[in-house]
Every structure is written in C-alpha cells, then in structure tokens.
Image 1 (tube, rainbow, N blue to C red):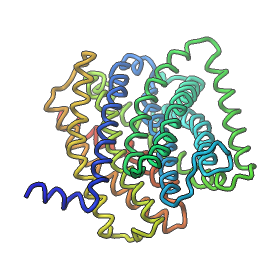
Image 2: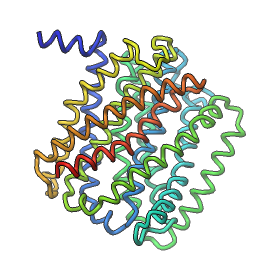
Image 3: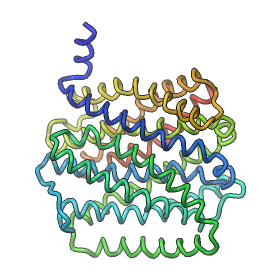
Image 4: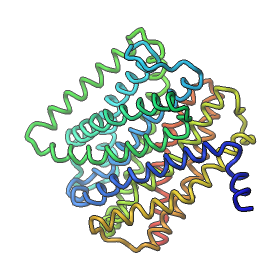
Length: 403
C-alpha cells in the first residue's frame, strides 16, 4: 500500500525521481565543503565588512550561468543537435563562449553593485571597490573553470549513459558552484593583501570584460549573440537579487557569527532549494520546447507530476541538509543552536523556500515561453537568483522563530 502510494505520487517516471534524488544527495555532500568553508571563515567575514553581501551573488552566479548552459545543452540533446566538438561555431562551442563572456562581465558588475549596496545601506567600513572587484573576479574565474568542466562532462556523460540531463544538471551544477566558489573567494581574500594586486586585477578585469563583450556581439556566431542578448540582462538582474540576499545575511551577521553552525547550513539550504527549482525549470523548458507541456497559467497533469516530485524530494533533502550542517559543526567545532533547532530551521524554512522556488521555476518558464524568449536562457537564472533572495528570507525567518 505504501509503495503504491509513493509510486502514484512520484508519477509515471520513477527513473526521474531516482536520478534527481541521487543528484540532490551528491549535491548535499558537496555542500558540506561549502558549509565547512563558510562556517570556518567567520573571522574573515567579520574582518572584511561587506564580503557577505557578495558571497550569495558569487555562488549564485555559477548556478545562474552554468545551470542555464546545462539547460540549453539538455534541450540540444533532446532535439538531437548536440555534438561534442572543439569547433567554436558548434552548439557546444558557442554556449561555452557565452558562459565565459557572462562570467567576465558579471564578475565585474557584481563587484561594483556590491560596493554600491554596501554604501547605500550603511555597512560600516565596507571593503573598497577594487578589493570587491579583485575578490569577485579571481574567485569567479577560478570557480568557473571547474564548474564549466563539470557541466560539459555531465552533458557528454548523459549522452553516453542515456540518462536525462534535466534531472541531474541543476543539483550537481549548483552543488559544484557552492563547493568551489567559497574556497575560491577565500583564496582571493588572501591575495588582496598583496600591495597593488587589487588595483591591477580591477583594471585587467574591466578591460577583459569589455573586450570579451564587444568581440562576442561583433562575431558572426548567431547563437552566441542570441544567448547574450537574452541572458545578459537576466544574469545582471539575478545578481542584484542575490546581492540583496547577501545584504539580508549581512544584516544578521552577529547572530550567524554567534552560531557559526548556522553559517554552515546556509550553502546546503540555498543549494537544495535552488536545485529543486532548477529541476522543475529544466524539465519544464525541455517539455515546452518538445510540446509536451502547454504554457498554461494552471499547471496541467504533466507539469503537476514534476511539481509533486519536487515537494516529495524536498522532505529528505532538507532533513539531510540539517544533518550535513550538524556534521560540519561537529568536524570543525562550530557553535550550534542545537540539533532540534537546526532541523526546524532546515525543514520549515526549506519547505517554504521550495514552494517559492517551484512557483518561480514554473511561471518563469511559462512567461518567457509566451513572450517568445528561450526559457533555457531565463528559467535557471530566475530560479537561482530569486531563491537566493526568497530562500535567505525564509532562512532568516526560520532562524528568528526557532533559534
């Protein structure tokens, strides 16, 4: 009876549930690295006021850019147009170039916006613009190299192994972004103390971002130009939302530093909510392109299966997210508000964040499709950025209630 109910709830595609759950669990393990890093650098966060504003945006940037890249490659695989090749004019080549241009441009843009937001909202003694830029650019480029390699590897592996990229891309890219971005940012904070380095990096980063953007728009690669036209403003807007999420965390920095275990919970919490929304978004965009799902205001039967799947997966995922954070606290001796409080924050805040994430995923795909835009370019960025903001609000609200 219980097994039959579970199968009915998961719908007619149990393989999707298995693939998604495995990817989410792998992502949680990877988030342990991010949790350990964030919990362990509380002194750095306290020493560099304003840095926490940049952290969610820098992490989300990886998921935004490379999650969208994976979504486009997943659609290309379904459509039969994907080929692994080094040719720059191929589908893969133009998508990789677009990801590189977006990485350079948004790393610089987010640094400027982080400084502006820090000044406008009165963060005392916030680090300088050139320091923001050096941290954002060095950390962004280092982590993007790793996440790009993983994204292409997953695309090629899905072709060879026959599993659906839409079920695994969002969780694994999100987790890898968490895992490598925070250590990369921490390395960058160690480098900014070198005399003249921040200024030099800022100049090089600005020139490189401008040159890459101009060259891309002047190239004869039509798909590259189309991706940038649609994705550029979305990625920047997504970055702004993520910076506001960082500001939300920065405002609660005293509470988070008091219990660094809560800092360790932030990456798996946001990663899990974003990954669940990303799975819904990837599946919706592919099904919209293939005509399986209609762009209706009320989700149809096929869409409801994907939404129900996300809610079912959220229950064990957020319970395990709490366990991951508790493990991180135990490993490096972080002060914790207690196992029960951590579980309550993860479960209550996480389920609320998942509902919000699914709404953004579904209606982001539907609205962009109705407007004649490619939901592959917009869906994942909307989810990753909005869930940083909405997820941070959900997290802080749960902390206020249960801690």
